Length: 332
Image 1: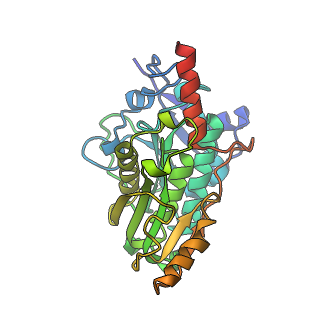
Image 2 (image 1 turned 90 degrees about the vertical axis):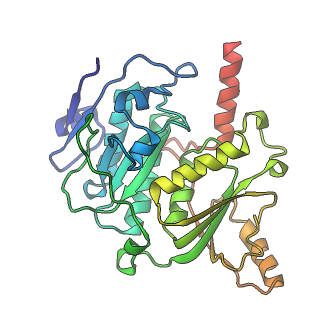
């Protein structure tokens, strides 16, 4: 039997998790027996304890159950709340996995893009500070006018689905400048992690109509460390598609296989901008040179920062695959 634990404002202060300047209660459910697929990981715990399914957390049919936060209370307060919630679920052990993350509905109180991206990034940082193998999905929601700050919803509480952003809400007065009609990005997207999710989220809030995502095929995987642990192409495409549609449902999404770095953007006249990471920004110049040879306009680009913890740890798929190898070796 589960039970409810309340973390009050004073709890945060006493635990040294960060100062808050408002009255706030977080409702959490403690962990039950660990049922992780691999030793030491609360893989299925989140779905079991919070009742979250992918469809429900996205606003589909059934009961909506997810951790709710608002940017109104500030970055550090939200990070502290998320860390406390993760601790309540699994202690210091990882929460979830790439297929079963904890969903965090983040209400963007002012509707601004800068607020959205800054808070989203820092919540992903907070998840990694809890554990490098903790998986959360941050779902930005448009302000509804409600003053609710955050909670973990109880079963059958009748909570309405959140209001997701759409092209109509991405206006210049809310800081959505520049925006493009078509944006592209690419990657391997193995075990969709915080860095991938920030990249994809950024892309969603720079396009008003369509998004092209290139997912690497076998030809581009040669030489990848621990390559035998890379997820199948179809699984990686499914993860990307599910995540993107959980954040925005009004876009034209084209997820395609790619065999070279440009992913076809060197010849695509519709694409106006690329979203890149520090690892891929170097490809922009060569892509634009190729576009010039075809008489196409150069692409603009948006570079996201690395997602690092306070310990300067960098999350990447290689690290996650190495951990899987180590766990398999331990199990032998």
